[in-house]
Image 1 (cartoon, rainbow, N blue to C red):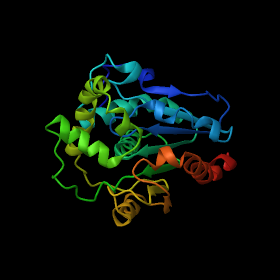
Image 2: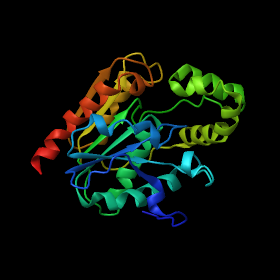
Image 3: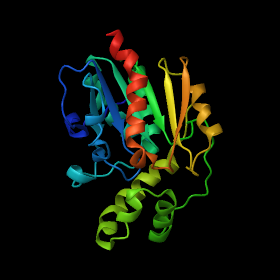
Image 4: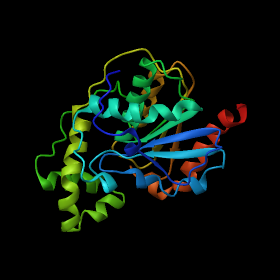
Length: 256
């Protein structure tokens, strides 16, 4: 794993309600255009033996003054370095949309470095890495970016109707959508941890068949769950989602 040392690792991680005695850590990776605060309310929904740690990509919120990372391998390498100290106890990853692909690639990078295996990888609203991606999505103009976000829905779509906010967020959105477009899956051995996939039943951006292909990326059990909502079902079915995550992670906590 190539490690880049341009930023302190702790700049990447946010703990909303630290739990120093937790038996398992859930590290969460945000979607394109998203930030760590998407997970701010989750700890109060989780059992006390699970600590939530949210990843904060550069160039947003309290890291707004830092350069965006537009190169996928660099993003993965730096995120892996930041997360590595969390693996002193069992760790599961959750990633939503772009964050699911980032979480998967960070898991691969950590494995290549000899780090302990994850307890579970949970991927949300994202087709499997091995599923070919169409080259049709373009973000050359502001209106194309806006149209794409409106189609996905969620709170971000409403916020972008504010012109001043859009001006602030547009560079980050272009960067993150560029990461989505540039990602190329490199075949390799499957992960040695269970993989759980979750999708919204009204999400037009991904099909169940595309999500089921995640089963090819693990040598351990795979399971798929559907919750009510669109691409951002994470905002409308939060309680159901976090309850599901806690259930899928409870066996790990109990074994410790």
